[in-house]
Length: 438
Ligand SMILES: Cc1cc2nc3c(=O)[nH]c(=O)nc-3n(C[C@H](O)[C@H](O)[C@H](O)COP(=O)(O)OP(=O)(O)OC[C@H]3O[C@@H](n4cnc5c(N)ncnc54)[C@H](O)[C@@H]3O)c2cc1C
Image 1 (cartoon, rainbow, N blue to C red):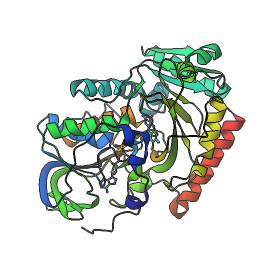
Image 2 (tube, protein in one colour; image 1 turned 180 degrees about the vertical axis):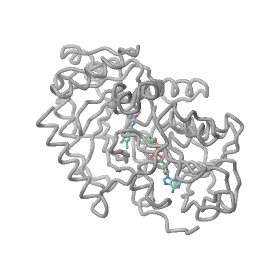
Image 3 (tube, rainbow, N blue to C red; image 1 turned 30 degrees about the horizontal axis):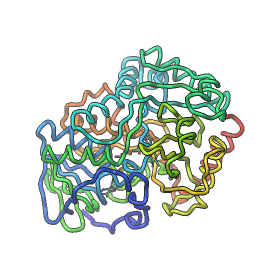
């Protein structure tokens, strides 16, 4: 097994501690880094929602699990996101049926639709203190093209018994406090939470079940040692029967080709200081999570202290906190809520979303007993939690092969050496399409 140097992003990525969530999360006790060799039934690489959920679901069944994260649990997208618990995948249930056939498509839709309930169940079962609000998820349309998406969501999920309702322009003004959108929907399965506290709560639940979690332990390579898998780290190794890789948008060079199977795109987030009484009661008075349907989407919501969070794609590929990189999102925020003062922002941070070209997350079995789950397309709070459970089932040979998304060969996104330029062109195209067909 070769041990390449740690990927450059280990040092250059912005630190979750500079985010609102880093400043306000529940405490996590210090975790050791790995020194020497440990053995386990299953090694999990990556301590975001996906890896933590996989480890937890395995440990609940008595499986001996070791989890290694290059930094700490929740350090990646899981600790920096909008905290929106979004029901379903990016593609609609009818498309799932068309793509995967009636029986499997319905089964995938049902599993994806049930992902928020899994999050709520874990939070309740393990008493995770993460400011959960089961207030629903609002999706907003800027124009006719967006409204076709929200109408389809209401129609297709509604036919499957989901608690979804359309919102007209007046409803949007009342529920969201802006006249910037023409229509929308509310899906009562959704909600919002403090994502880093949720991740740390999952980590604590793992520890409670005996999972050994190692922080500051980047996996440098994975290879065979006889019939075992050996995960090499800087100062040690993990010997295991099975390995699950959950590194999503932060996947590096550890496994050839895996990083190239998704498109990592940066999202920037800003948070205001706590809003005054007038604005906090006018904007999202029901405290739902909200997002629009645009190709370069924006999303927003509140933390428990009435700080408004607003997120948008940013047009750079390096995680450097520079206010100039947030201009696109700030212009959007000013357009949606012109009365919010954006001259004084409390926090600014970035994180990597992993996109896939077919808009669904991917499960791969890279070799016998070596699994990966990545590509949540910006919907990982609920879906990566669900994926962790599904991956745990695959690792134990218990997942029903035809029940959820298929285990697929690893695709290679054809961007080659011009990856960053290709991503920038795609983002520009999306921006143009958003203005032509809102
Ligand atoms: C700014 C932002 C806002 C978002 N908002 C939402 C939202 O509101 N709702 C929603 O549903 N989704 C949202 N998402 C998406 C969601 O956060 C992700 O889909 C989800 O967190 C992915 O979880 P994960 O466990 O797969 O990966 P991550 O949380 O990214 O975890 C990957 C982990 O792998 C570790 N790692 C990487 N390489 C190695 C290695 N070699 N060895 C060991 N460890 C390694 C990293 O340190 C990291 O902790 C957002 C994403 C971003 C970036």
